[in-house]
Amino acid sequence: MKVANVVGARPNFMKIAPILQAMRQDSFFTPILIHTGQHYDAAMSDVFFRELELPIPDVNLSVGSGSHGKQTGEVMVRFEEVISADRPDLVLVVGDVNSTLAAALVAAKMHIKVAHVEAGLRSFDRSMPEEINRILTDAISDFLFVTERSAEHNLAAEGVKAEKVFFVGNVMIDALMANRKRAAASDVLKRFRLEENAYAVLTLHRPSNVDAAEPLERIVAALEVIRDKAPIVFPAHPRTLKNLQRFGLLERLERGGKVRVVEPLGYVDFLRLTDASRMVITDSGGLQEETTMLGVPCVTLRENTERPVTVEQGTSTLVGNDTAKILAAAENGLASGRMTARIPELWDGQAAERIAAVLKKHFS
Ligand code: UD1
Image (cartoon, protein in one colour):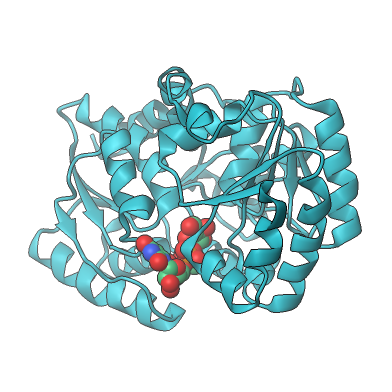
């Protein structure tokens, strides 16, 4: 069974690694890896391939950055050429980035089966590009692999037939469990001169938080207070860094030296940094899941989440970008430190094996 596995942006790489590994262990599968090139920097892409022991992609479409239309369109044009020349039995996409939707759309129109890993998540906020990508990808997928029960309900409510939906757990947690020991050996704390359990980690990249001056200013105002209680390490997404500079906020954030703005980190260093932190402040989707698994309080700079299990059972608190709300949640987070959160159902490191088993059964 020939499977074209597609990755494009940073949060895809750790999800595909366990899937590829599961497929490579069984000669039934002939997996190939296609990188759309949506993320292309060494720090946003190459380091993940090295650390997650991903093979060099069979094809790199090198689409790069651009408007949503241009980026999605470029992936479609180039992906269609590649899979026309070498038709797979299945196209497997993960997550919710533009590359996910583009590849799924091409495959569906070529009557090639589509598997979507991390299907069914809904924030119910269509101003998020990812929400559009999720809804449309799910609508044209043949195998919908879900990470939490809420996703099953969402898909049922949208009329997706239950026989297409498979609750398998979370491949991102597979990657976390497979790498946690290795991450413990990372020297990242030493490099940044941090004490275990005595600092906060910040990540920030959602357009609704960083593309306009006002929300970003509200967040920076909160960080100016939090940094006096615990130093903050901030591996900054390239777009966020550009905007902080553009809005004249970078200098304010770094004043006093308690917020350390650093380059985006690789998977292993970042996992260690999170695992040893007292609290995470983020607008990332994946990080809400990782902190839940690690028991680290997560102040989530979003009004909603497509991953409600991380709030209901996990460590995430939704606060949006209101200064006072961020401060209140951060106080709690710093006070409590590590928590014993409930581990969501099937987040046990075996999701990729379950996916491979479902596919094998159907294609045998
Ligand atoms: C994308 C995903 C988002 C995901 C995020 C993780 C979509 C719609 N968004 O957002 O869901 O959470 O990745 O990082 O697919 N840039 C670089 N180097 C790179 C890549 C990007 O400098 O390697 C800069 C460019 O200025 C680019 C900008 O970042 O224009 C945005 O990149 P893009 O891929 O469009 O979206 P992200 O914000 O990274």
